[in-house]
Every structure is written in structure tokens, then in C-alpha cells.
Length: 290
Image (cartoon, rainbow, N blue to C red):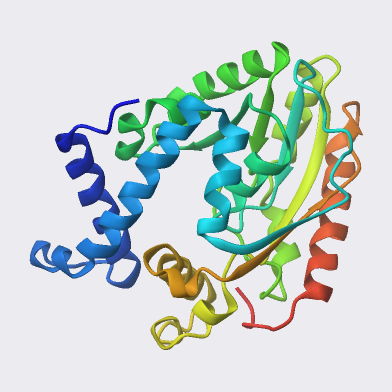
């Protein structure tokens, strides 16, 4: 597959630079963008390499290739064996700790047909192979019914779907004592809707922890921000920008697969609460509350 055209690369580079600088400074002059151009160029190259591999191989293999570039290790706990086979509708629900959580789930669930519901971003129009695995959530509420219809059609066709029911970044349970409290913001109604509308649906709860590097979280730049949400975002950005902070030790804890039926959302939430609290107990340090 050909390399990205220079104009696409330039657009992606500029967007990545904006995202990086915006993590540290919500408002910044355009003249400041060159400060992060080097790291932005490196990550843009990596993104286009991943885009190429998704097209040449599949989502699982490409994600397995990319993970070591951003993490020290990824450990699965209670991963279904054998994996839930393609052709069987699968809904993976998990906490959204950020950084490489979706990538780790892409790599380990073993489903090349996995799609994820995610927010619209301009850069995604430049990545057609990756975009095939995304169901884009528009900011305009009136268009969100299309997202639901697309997700249901994919599942009814025997596909796999990854959903983060909180709809936002959540605390990494390896570092934040109140990570399980984010379950109060989960859309249980959405889980029940998928369960009612998709025959023979299997639901797989998954708790991700350790995606934020301890060293990045305790670094001098991150410690400038006291609020947990902002501090984690800065730490995650440092991990993306600089290889010396890509030392996270990620754990994916899977619950037992659940057969969709009445009350399954309550089962999912109870399972996730147990998984997140297990992650909390095994965390090696604390950054306080989110």
C-alpha cells in the first residue's frame, strides 16, 4: 500500500500537534505548535503505519504490532479460551481508562470484525482502513439514532462491538481509589437495549487498568496539575509524545461471558464492579481521587 499523500500527512500532523499542545494549554497561540512538531511527526508516522497494517493484515494483527510501541506489557486475566468465534454476535463492554485501552482490547479479543463506538474526529477521515472499524458518534444528538442503528445492524450480522458505556474517559483503576464510582455514569439502558434487540448476543465485561504510566503520572509536568482528570490526560499525552514514558504495565481483566437476557445490565455492572475493585487492590500506587 502506498505511503500517505503529503497533504494528508500534513493535516494529520497538524491535528496531532494541536491535541498534544492542548493537553498542557487549553489556549495557545498558533506560533506555539512548532514546540511539539517533532513528537507529533513521530506519532503521525506511527498512525499511518498502523493504518497500512490494518489494511494489509487485520485489526487484531495490526493492534498486536502496535501495542509494544506504547506499553511495556499487556497481561490478560480470564481471557475467554477459545475466543468467542467470528459469526457470533459479541458486545464487549469496558471502562474507558484511555491511552491504549481500545487497542489492547482489539489485540486480545481475537475478533478482526470488532468495531468501536467513538467520537468523530477530523483525522479519522484520513484513515480509511481504521475507519472501517469505527462507528462515529456525532456531537449533534439528533444524528445519534444512526449510530444505534449501525451498531445493531453490525451485531445482528454476527459482528463484534466494543462499547464504553460511560461515554467519556474514566479513572485508571490502577491509580485512582474511586475508579469503580464511574459505573454510576454507565448507560445501563443501552446495554439492555442491545440485549433485547440482538438474538443470541454474548456480552463480555472487560476492565482495563494500568494504561497510564506511573512514571508519567508522577513526572514533573503532570504534577503541575492537581485535578486527577487533567493530570491523567497530561500523563497520557506524555506517553504518546515520548518513548521514555511508554512503560505502562496494562492488565485486562475479563468477566465470564454473559448470555443476554432480562436484567443482564445489572449482571454486567456487578461484574465490572468486582473487576475494577480487583484492579484497585493490585495497583502498586495511588494518585488520589479522580
